[in-house]
Amino acid sequence: MNNETEIDIVSANALPDEGAIEINLRPQALADYIGQDMVKGNLSIAIKAAAMRQEPIEHVLLSGPPGLGKTTLANIIAKELNSSIHITSGPAIERAGDLASIITNLGPGDVLFIDEIHRLNKTVEEILYSAMEDFALDLVLGKGPGARTVRVDLPKFTLIGATTKPGAISAPLRDRFGLTFRLNYYLEPEIEKIIHRSSKILEVKIEPGGVKEIAKRSRRTPRVANRLLKRIRDFAQVKGSGVVNEDVSRRALDNLAVDTLGLDESDRRILTAIIEKFHGGPVGLQTLAAACMEDEDTIADIHEPYLMQIGFLKRTPQGRVITQDALEHLGLAAKQSTLNI
Ligand code: ADE
Image (cartoon, rainbow, N blue to C red):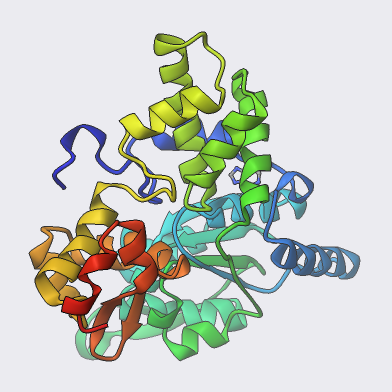
């Protein structure tokens, strides 16, 4: 990253210390959750039906790019079910014993949220199968020839898994989720509503022009919108009258090197590398990452999903390819004749 002062301003991944501020802004009920209407509608039916039958809802898998509200939704589901939520993540559950201790502490109807569930290791994942399907845990006691398994019954619970990489989830695990939902990038008017709501909570004075300007540059991602709002509030306080209007928003975002489509230095570096160093592509992820000194996962999980969403990048079996729209946005259309596209 060569933009040292503003690292990751539009990264959809949560930044260190961001969790606490995000929590204030997170809606607590499905009715306050803006956007993702299809997911909300289907979840609401599942929750009501389960309540009528006095049963826990089926296990839920939430997938989609980072920052779109998977954790928020998991918390809301637990609240709507009047259940306690236990939160962990795939990489945090290292050994079978870690999972056993979490799962045997669940109460009837509790929600277990596993973030980044695609990163569970195989041994842990296999133990999860019987826990999800039969509400039982098969534990191996001892080692070697004397080892024996015992089956421990568990209360009926609901597992909510979240993943940015649904393709990396094995079929046996995927099949054990009764409800699977994919979160999509938000529509701009939905992001505007979220900015409006957050401004009220944070007591930020904001004008409609400010809301619009921030929404345009938020990568259709609530986490990014809320982060930009806070930075622009600071800018308005120091450089303006404290009111977030269109002009202040524009100047602040320009200062943060976030362009009119929400692209940052890293996005531009990735796109420019494909154009300048690889004739517009195709180029493999590893080669591209090395050429622009970025981490492969950061490119694949954070930058590419949005660049593909806005039609600036295509993934082909041969590698990543730039598009005409990207060239025009970067002001490099004249280069087209020298490229493979
Ligand atoms: N804050 C973050 N995501 C949100 C959403 N989907 N609705 C309302 N507020 C939010």
